[in-house]
Image (cartoon, rainbow, N blue to C red; front, side, top):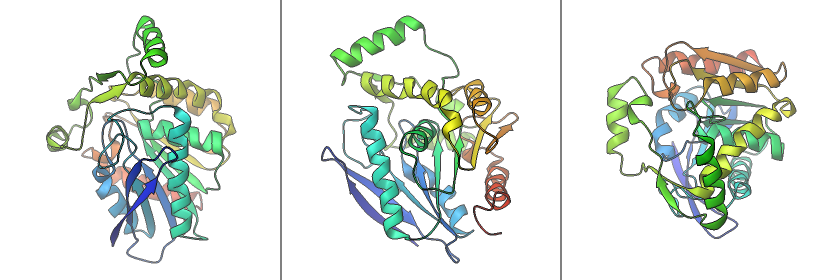
Length: 279
């Protein structure tokens, strides 16, 4: 069963969210954070999989994304994004009290999830992060980053296209076509959003060892959007509680690749093997 909810941000925006209840006894609840320019409904099949294995999911459209309010692709600060996720986590605890909490994030959502765990140290039992935006697959020239920092300071709401290569999200052409035709997907990013998220990636790498809960980090070797080397660097800095899984030949959206069933099963097996949920 699926239901909707809303969250009010600290600066007065309404964020739209959905709850997917498990089809069996609830073993855990998972918060799900999507990537840049997309929205939570693109993860319905992910939520369905976990629901069939006793895991409830709560997801929101981030500010400036999907059905949520806010200027498209904008955030006034990184701290505000952390506060938004904090409200999502609190909602999960409110709806599922005394149920173990797991976090899940993809791409930019992986950046946010890792930083949230490092900076806020929530009471969670584990986390799964796929293709995290810790570094871009092709780093922008230093002059562009410097210009971005200057623009973020002077004109933080200045909007530019992300330039996302849509064919790089998945080898499944139906997924690519659906993405390109999705009216809730956008290619906008403000200078403030870019700078805040871009520099939060190296911060997460530097502080990876502070994550003490079981963490699964995955990346495809053929990802042309976010850097697999950044993910490997993160894992090297992290402790033994972090599992790194590399998927040979897979593109950016592991959950939308032809091998997605294998990806989902690996995630489930990892949760069971790490005693995060019962088998």
